[in-house]
Length: 342
DNA sequence: AAAAGGATCAACCGCTCAGCG
DNA sequence: GCGCTGAGCGGTTGATCCTTT
Image 1: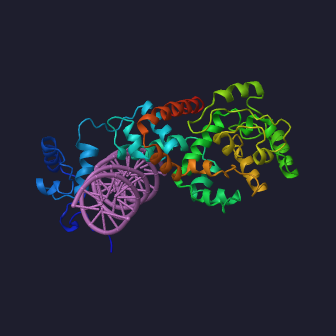
Image 2: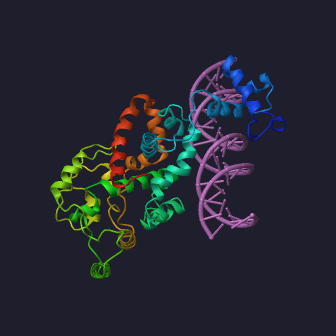
Image 3: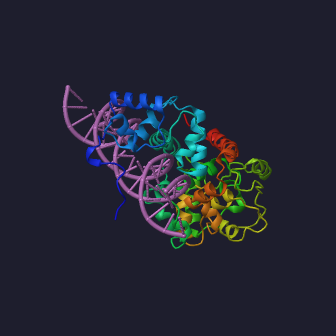
């Protein structure tokens, strides 16, 4: 037996609200309140609308102090930061933005903000892998398709992961790119390809292969100490001290002497590489290189499981949100430095 | 100028959860 | 403890507007 309908579907009006309906609803609620019974409300005021529809109309459009459109840069920052942190918890995000509704933020994110962030850079093959089929290709290429934890990653979590990866690539001095000690052993074919590219030059949009942006380890260390990406990761970033390790795969496998944060570990396998390198690495190391998503905790962070656990465990977004906001504002600002959202 | 395709956003749908008897 | 009910939420849809060809 299915769930009983919340109203008589045959006798309710659907579609856009007329000004008359708006006026009726607004006048009644302003005078009497909702009475904590949305289901009964439309009958009381003679509206042929579902109670749920009335509730939505009031909350999203008719109640006082609602703002529509014209999102500020600060609001963008908050939305992005929170989305990366907690995913599509629109009501929680809306709670941080006075006058904004969850529906408005959801629409704004889906239609504009997401594109600003994900679409402005040239869409890479990694993006396609991540988004085209819920990350399945990437999981398979990484030999992780059998990992039930990774399979539990929702599209939202994958999207957040992708955003985070972009942030990492741009800001993390500990990235592959910036740590020669992390560079992989190359197959003869790969070496030949690199040589060819170095001789012939590569797409000017891309930095040269295997040319560290910040070759100074001291510089990387300084920056590393200041990069505290989120409240959940410990902030004791430690520059990889495994100089001499020849392969990132080794590093990922052992993590000897490191106090890796989630951010550092998870992305190590891909960040800072050109698309060509990523593709090649994935293909040539299928099953052995990856984002080191072996830890249940790490995976949970990206998944809805974490969202649920975190939300229900603390149930105190009010207090945690400040931390959340600060850390992610910082993260977002780092991002924005290298990648203007305008 | 018109058609096609894309973007936007209001509204709906169906699910989960909390409160209550 | 259990079942019912309504509130709330996130995902999705579809109408409309806008842009491009």
